[in-house]
Length: 513
Ligand code: GAP
Image (cartoon, rainbow, N blue to C red; front, side, top):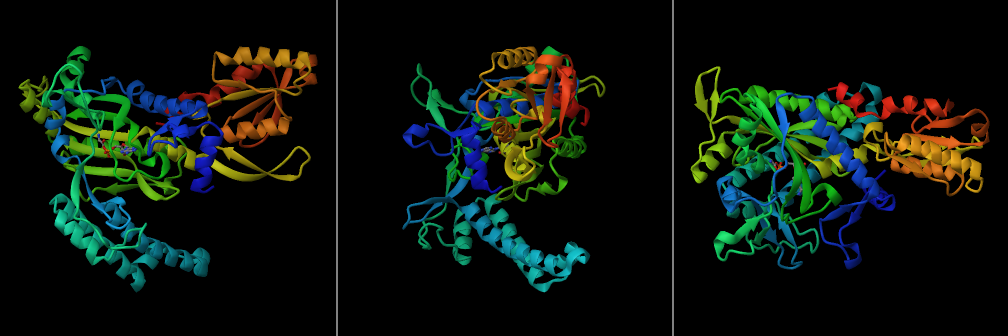
């Protein structure tokens, strides 16, 4: 399914709506509908349990969105959380300079991929892609060009050389996608934080920011958490919460939003041991993604060329979204930068006494940070499929199915009386519904023909449908239909819970970690 279909499916079945749609929407802000909120909550629960429940040395926290303004001075966000922006004077459109350059590079990459695809077709099973890429001169030249441009861009960004970035855009003759012109303004830095005012104080003291990352709430509470839970290093603090960024170019649906949700974990370690834990968390997080059934070929690591102001190593887990491989999660070795900065600005010690070493120090931090909304998009990308399956008469028919892992599907079981105007059937179906509803999210649906109801459940990813028919009235059995295999079997109502509970349970996923 292509990206447009994914977006319209998300709206049609109540997963995602444009925010304030009746007022023509608010750009890059989205609302989660009845199905979306269930799926999102399940993703969050799986992440939370995998961090906080499965690790004795990771605890949770829920900090406020507003923080003391000094927080953001200390963290570097006031001075350095910028994107380089450039305007096209003809179209009046605003772009991120680095994304314009990346877009140019991506076009070269597409040419390479086309050459690879052609060769694959020509050579069939014998095709060795690695060897082809290493020996085909045209590909080598294009790859060298890409590496050169990206390397130069990273150096310019690190040096905050805005003039250099503009010169690179001009050298590559990059035109505005809207107007086609190369009539650019200078590149300037744009801070991504949203600000607001405290009501009861005037002047600069009253300036508040909406947090651009949840991590700082963890840093400033580092000692509160450590002392109240008596954790010993290494230990982690996990948090799920909203973050806000005034993205210049917000596009690609929920991939880049202005209000989004992060699931972050800061792991506090002894100085000098951070690289060991950095590698460990990279591997653990990749396993987490694979446990949700994501194919290994759709995931890859990308090491950062330009490190954020706080990091000494950083890698993204990239996922193959419908528009290409993009960052899904970041794993960052943040050194002691944040804690030292907060210590200096607040004048309060943020040190840990290590009983094994018998000394105090400011810990180093390894962070895992994943956008909940991006994870949602990744799950939808993986799951949404169009299939040809036999219908009730055995003829081929098309169905759209959301093959989500059962444990994170919004609805686990749909209960469907065969006919809606037969009270005995609807009464029994209601009984079944009430029996199951306290165990997991169920839906009762009696409208339309049974085939149509199956399709509706397939479209929202319900792993099981239970049909109550006339035999049910005689022998107490119902038909249990499996979303993926389409197999149907008779199950006694008393056995239903035992039959489905295990396969829709999150424990199954957690055990894979
Ligand atoms: N605390 C570190 C941090 O915030 P980041 O790489 O800027 O690092 C972490 O963000 C994750 O948050 C990203 O990997 C992405 O999944 C998500 N994210 C960042 N900006 C986003 C946006 N504008 N919309 C949706 N998700 C975003």
